[in-house]
Length: 513
Image (cartoon, rainbow, N blue to C red; front, side):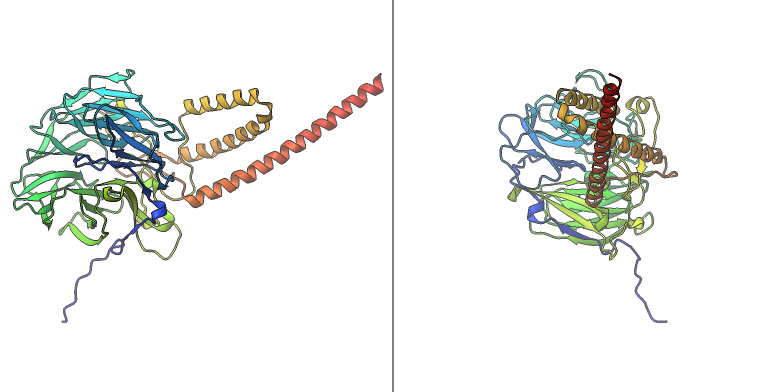
């Protein structure tokens, strides 16, 4: 019998990285020179936020994702901290809410205006005061609304409930005090019931997120972990760090037993921290080293050998940090499965890099876009604090459904303002009528999409709903233009009919007199 090589079948074997053109990058950004091992960049489908270098206090920029090209050096900033900003994170359930932490030992939560930051923003929505030293990391809970975790150089992890009515919150709902040194990273599992941390004391801890009770603890002498990720529902952890010989290394762990790693793999002899990124929908792991120009990517399976190297994206520009676009912001028509926003400090540049599965067809590829976590919370803060755990609300990325509408209170306020404007300006009456008709139609479509959303636990049920791609937005605009034309014609016909009736009434009065 002749020997035949064993090939592993994978639909992601030929994934490649595609950097954006210079016109589609963010140029002239004054990127922070902080030595903190954080990403310095946060992205959602509407905005990109970048921590900047400034004198006297800390600040970060918030730009529209479509605001590419050369940045105005005088662009307004979010600048309410008294010390340098160390980390920023967007609220996963509100694209207009972002949290920041700073060397001034505070965490601040900001409400970004609907049209972006047009003037310097200095007053936060919430200010969290509880840490005694600089706050280095923040993380939003993945399924509960308005629950925020923070950790500082006082070795404490604090849990905050932002539904509290106070503008300045001084008492966290819980404080976790198991760490004996600075916490280097935090990661949640899919439903947010477990929290994994790495610490400068070389230990990896797996604990209950709500109570802080330690369930597992790893202290491997051959691996010094700096970053940790819980790998979705695979019941495994991945850590990046260094070996005993100071080689950069990754280690894979069984979530149920952290005594010995399942796998250890040395990468190279460089000194920069490895940032791991995991996509639970494709089971792909991306490794981006600080100061490197390349991004390695692997596929992870639940059976040996667990880790399958695919290839790497290479470039000559070293990265200082990385932002990641949520799945609902990807371009599914080009088979994009992941998108990085590479922070290049030597060029003052933010460069989008799309990871693409090569397919000939431009139609929606259902096999590479399974149901994914959406932008709706599964729980309120009070429900989660009371002991309830729930998986995320899933959505489909298939084009055709509407985006989430703003909260009803805000929408009602907007409608009342529009009504007052139309009353004060008679020429706006027709426009306001058309807008009301369009909003009523969109509300009907939104109600249909709302009924298709379902809160999914353990991935058993399915839900639908997705963001709009550029082509879908163009189609929506064309439809709205057609609707405006139709409504205008109806209004013209109504005005002609009213004039006819007025003329008939006038003739009747004249005949009677």
